[in-house]
Each structure stands twice: as C-alpha cells, then as structure tokens.
Length: 202
Image (cartoon, rainbow, N blue to C red; front, top):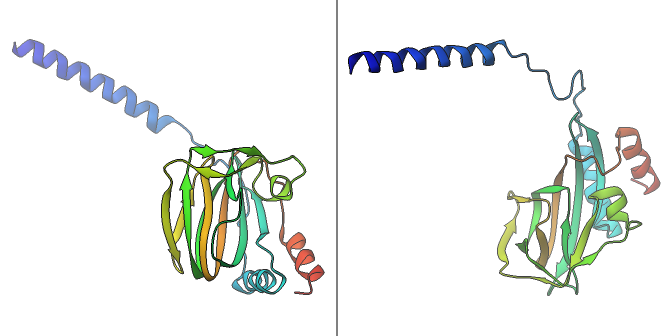
C-alpha cells in the first residue's frame, strides 16, 4: 500500500513539474503589439453631451479603436423624457456588447434575450454601418428584466440581448463602451471626432 501511494505521489510530481515547465516556458505575446493608448478628454466628451442635448442626437460615436483582436468604441448617448416605449423600440446587436456608464439623469430599461417580432435592421441603417453593427428591432421581449438606471450606474448589455428604455424621467445621458471583437464597426480617430464636432458647431 505504501509503495502504491509513493508511486502515485511520484507520478503526480513528474506530471506537475512537466505542466509547470510548459507554462513557465510558454512565451505569451501581447494581443495588440506596440499599440498606443487612446485618450479622450472630459472636455471633448462634454462637447458631445452638449451636441446631444441641444441638437437632439441620441447616439454619437466618439472613437473606434483597434485593440488587436477586436475594436473598442466610445460613444455618448442622450435621450430626452419618455413616458412610454415607442413601437418596435427593442434593440439588439448581434456582435457588439455595450457598457453604459450613466453620467446624468435617470430612466427605466428592460432587457431580455428572447425577442418577440424580430425585424432585421437593413444594411444601410446608420447604426449598423457606424455604431453597433448588424442587429434587430423588436416589438417586445419574453420574460424581460427591469432595471432602474441613475447617475453613476454601470449597465452591461451582452451582444444579442434585447434592450429598451420604457420610461425616462427628464433625460438620461450616458457614456457607452462598445466591445466589438469582430471589428464590424469602422475605426474613428481623434481627427475624425474633431471634424464631426466642428461640423456641428461644437
């Protein structure tokens, strides 16, 4: 019995040493080799917030950055008061996950993956082309969850999950971080952002 136990321990030690050697000898390269960081100032975000509020622009892309194995987008969204949801206003994005960081205001959002009355967004839709890639609008969701959002909250909406604002008290303004692993959204740099803001008189 003692010899069997010693044999098992010895075999385990050899396997452990082999696996440890493989892990420590493995060379891991960065997924975005020699990539620069991207900085967006609070002042620039403020210009987008102002444009959204005064020009009634719901969703504005600020950056779209190549991070090697995927892209990341930064956007600013502003929505005015809403008493009830608009028809077919459930949205879902096939490939892009969105993270909301609520800057000001409050609202009620419903989410759910089981969409009712799904309608494909056309390829020439602005959101499909420039914001969040292919997706759908839907009439409703089965068994949705309801979330009360307010300033300071963070809200993660995975790709494929339906989401819909059902009520907005006065307004809600939020920063969006879009995770785009398939690189379906075109790149946008600081120069393009400044050109956009200049065109809008910002």
